[in-house]
Length: 274
Image (cartoon, rainbow, N blue to C red; front, side, top):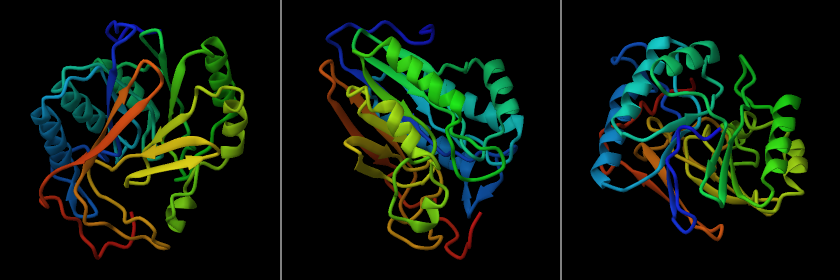
């Protein structure tokens, strides 16, 4: 299914915007760890528009809502409409999928887990959520779905998107909340050398590392950031961010993390968790 995505010429670069971990609430007044998540989300959207970059698709990689409310997903969708581009999404550990699916569909942000882009690329979106817990797991269904999707297009360059990180981040407290069965994911990917990039959210920080010969990228949250290389829960003072990805016709990926330029959204550094 490819109904949401515009036609892309074979030799054209494909440009993606990744937004992640918005943690929106029912109302516009609520905050996460001292940051008003609606205001930070709006500021990120305004900054994206101010960059005046041409792009083809938005990827929202989970934790769109913090409080499970339908209104939070409506707020997300209204924000995305400002970008005037199609958007695909996947759930994070804080999301409530019944409200998420229904409200986003009502708001015109439809569920689409496999996206073909031109003749060279495909994007595959996985659901790593385990209801009620922060860590992730890919079910047998998800693993089989991924295997089937890769087998249908083995000659396409592929990016796999998921919420939870499959490789250690360097933060021991975050790594207790990582993907619990990365070995099974690796087994599915092993026969497909063109599926060489994975992109996640969840850890509220930038990461660009190698995992079993594949590149793993994580992207800052649009609200609160977590400090890298910490054993215990630690908030960072970096600004909210987003990621651009440019996919070339020969399989190359150029990517850049951008952040808001000021310190308007400073968190409560006395917070001990969430």
